[in-house]
Image 1 (cartoon, rainbow, N blue to C red):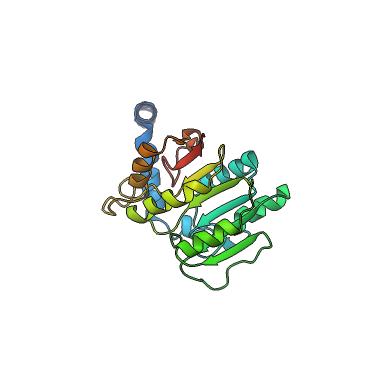
Image 2 (image 1 turned 45 degrees about the horizontal axis):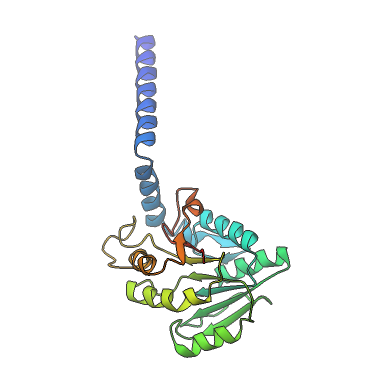
Length: 235
C-alpha cells in the first residue's frame, strides 16, 4: 500500500510539473503578471524594502540592472530625473557614474524630502517638473552638445505624464533614452482602477512622435515596472 501511494504521488507530481511547464510555455505573460501583482501587493517587503547602499530606491531590482546597462552603453553626460522623492534613484545613478568617472544627475521634485543622500554628481531642483522656471533652469544646466538621458517618475496621472513627455522629450539626444516609469499602472498589470496613467500617455506620445520607439529588449527579464516605457530616440 505504501509503495502504491508513493508511486501515485510521483505520477501526480510529474503530471503537475508537466502541466505547469505547458502552461508556462503557452502563457508566460500570465506567470509574469501574477508575479508582478504579488510583488506589488507585498510592497513593504519588496520595492519599499529595496535599498542601494542603505538608501531606499523604490525600484524593481531588475529595472535598476537595466538602468545600469543603459547608462554604461549610452554614457550620458546628463541624466535628468523627474520625481526625486527620497533621492535613492539619483544616488544610484550617480554611483554608477562614479564607476565610469563620467556624468551627472539633475533631479527635480515638487517636495523637498529631508535627509536625501548627498552626492557631488547630483543637483537638486525644487518645483514642478512642468513649470517653465524649472525647465529653464534645467536647460541652463545642460551644456550645448551634451548627451542627455531622461527618466520620468513624478506624478503618474496621464495628463501630467503627457505634458512631461512633450517637454522632456526635447532634451533627449538621438541614440539616448527617455524612460517613462510605472507604466504598469492602470491594469498593466497593477492598480486597474487608477485611470489613464503613464502607459496611456506613452501610447499617445508614440503615435505623434516618430523620433522615438519602444525598445522591448530592455524588458528582457520579463518583470519590469515600466512595460512599454523604455523609449529610444532614433532621430
